Length: 114
Length: 114
Image (tube, rainbow over all chains, first blue to last red; front, side, top):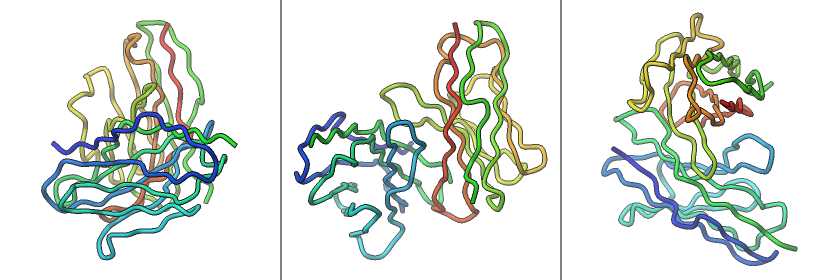
């Protein structure tokens, strides 16, 4: 069965620092990949998604992610974080052709200090 | 777009009681998903519907859990004979049909079983 691993459980940064959150999935077939964000007290929101084509995808609020098929990875990046980026970030995958359910990682809690 | 609506927001119940949650998806979305989230974990898939048909149900879901979507619009999730281990946030999401269509989440129903 497919699974998603997020190795960074808690990340603490100062404003303007660069961010990279790791995400690895286990599935040998075609996948659709997502990053969701959950700000304190709010519902999960889509940050960005990858279906096909350019492996570098750009999302909202200056976030981007790179799909590296050979590494089964889809890491999230932002060159300069802001205090307002404090949130929980979830990587998720759909194993296309197998199921239509979205499988989530355990999440990474990001705290940004001014 | 009024978003996905879930009711109630919070539910406190005693062990052994039955509870029912309601989800109203985005009106033009024909897919509806239920997830469960506990502290420090990512959302865990429970079941999903395409219109009124329940297409997949997690093996982790015991027989005490049942979900319906009778007219292909709103959905209910019922938990019978609740146990303390059922305490969690129950999330509903909806999406348009199509592989990889992003899920739009509601704010969830927080269940506490005492």
